[in-house]
Amino acid sequence: VGEQEQEPLLNRALANLASWGGIVSAEAPHSSIHSFAGILRVPRRCCHASASQAAPPGRRNGTPRPGRSVPQYDAEALGPRNFLLRGTQLRNTPWCLVLVVYTGADTRLVRNMHQPGVKLANLERTVNRTLGVVLGTQVLLAATSSWLYNRYKHQFAGYWYLFPDGMQASILLPDSVGYFLTFFLIYSNLLPISLYAQ
Image 1 (cartoon, rainbow, N blue to C red):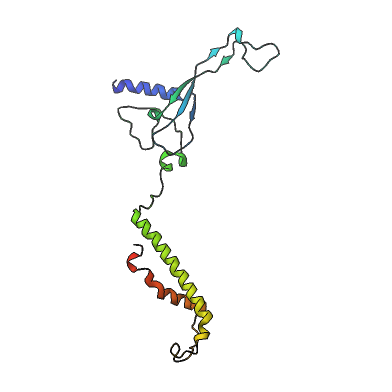
Image 2: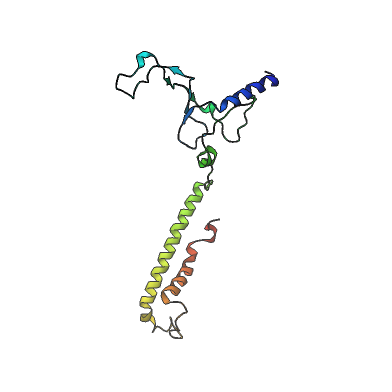
């Protein structure tokens, strides 16, 4: 079909677009870009009801009266071949008329946009869990040692080989906090520097 023959068809389609109506039923928004299901219902021109379809006397609702136009629809199934994603290039087609079904956050591209997950090997996951266990053990040992030291330090104050200069003045921090940090540093060798998360 030449270009001169394509333009009149497009002009006629655009001219009739304002008077054309229909109903599109589509599936709920989801993230799959390979599937789509919907139904396009296009109304027929107009058909008149026959006399046999007349409503019984005294009944206003129900079957239309003779001569009244009855809207009827032609249904057409819609599938992935009728669905275009944003940015799609349609080849070997001079023109087409489209209907926007999903917009904003309901589009397939937006629903597939997410932060990539952290890729870790099984060895790295095992090392991270081991580091957590070792760190928790170190904190527990430091807390226990700090509590025991503050509880029994006065019993050993008279031992000259432990305190040759006598009991010194208290540290700047509270004893529980200061000695916890002290024991935490002492037990820091439990966690080798080579196993720190890189």
